[in-house]
Image (cartoon, rainbow, N blue to C red; front, side, top):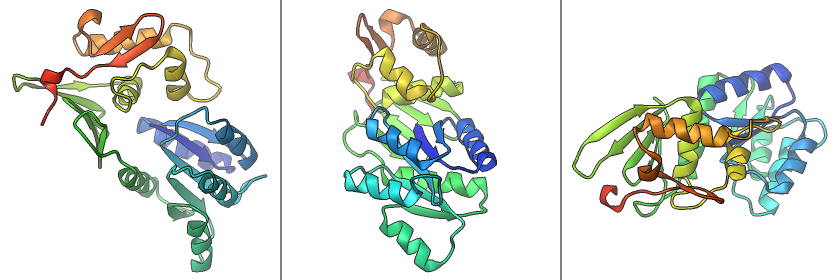
Amino acid sequence: MRLILVEDEADLGAAIKQVLSHEAYIVDWFLDGNQAWQYLETGWTEYTLAIFDWMLPGVSGIELCKWLRSHQLILPVLMLTAKDRIEEKIIGLDSGADDYLVKPFDMAELLARLRALQRRSSYVGTTLTPQVQPRHLQVGCLTLNYSTHQLHRQYSHGKNQVFSLTVKEFQLLEYFMRHPHQIVSRDQIISQLWEIGAEPVSNVVAAQIRLLRRKLGEEEKESLIETVYGVGYRLNIPVTEIGS
């Protein structure tokens, strides 16, 4: 899950990023509103959530919210601010923020509010459509547990197997599960799963997928993650393993 954080207080921004990274979020952190605005305008990255500070150098968090909503973008936004008057909260919410957190705050509350925003924007639909529950993501026979960083796989014969994943394995599988049966390229995966400014080695995606297949006890030819040579990769959920 990728998140954009715009916070000009260096210590606070670093603390938030550390906590979120531990929870398997990929965090792009900007120190001023102008940089964030320019990056959002490119539309290069698929963000799941946003955290904006109200008072920022250049463009404010309020202006960022207004820009998102004026472009019909439904990215859920949590506004951080020291402003605690009711009138100021109303301004923030009316500008397009989905939730409001007054500084100073506890990181546990920040995480809880992000989970709530995630639930409100969750997917619904058929068994092959990603379905986000409070702490789970389910697609067919696969369920990711956000609390434990584990994968639960339900087989057609009734067996349920649990796999413990590293942070990067979890992020990689989550991205595939949010795009089931879609071919995604190496560049798409890098752009979504590595932070801005990171320079992963050229074979990092292939290496991570090999590790994930090994973790799941799969060979490449029989893997849930199919290699589409010359194009990218695709998550295929076997029809016989789709839960009801």
